Image (cartoon, rainbow, N blue to C red; front, side, top):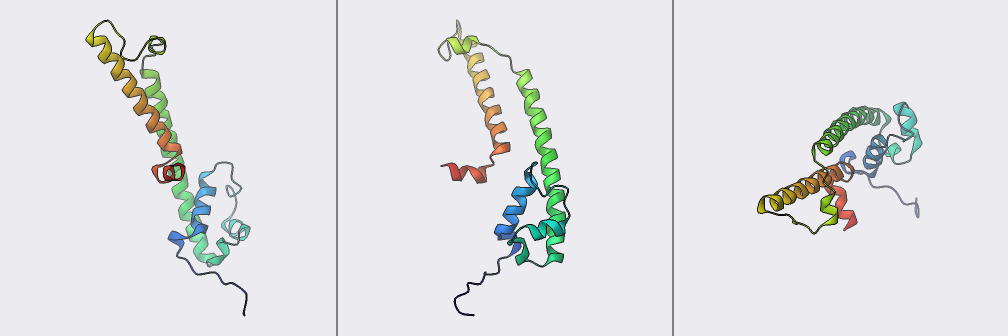
Length: 138
């Protein structure tokens, strides 16, 4: 018919439907958890651009991958928190200038501790904001 726009068929791997499903599966408060693939399929028009049988397979595969991703992130968070407990807290750094110390060894220890703390913070941040999403903030 004239005047009615038609949707262009997009492969699943590059589709907005896949991106939406991934976002919903990674969000622990999302409505898709505990629902059948048919219910999720009916919940959004983008999902209905694909055959229901194929969507069921996609949903099952992505649900397993999201579960594995959450367990990996939980383990990483546990390890990062463990690292935080191993770093000695020296509040003297906050009161003094950076690299302030009585000897070269003191200065080097302070510098090493600050570098390790920044590395841990960056590693922790990358779990919640992957590099692929950092471009959106620049």
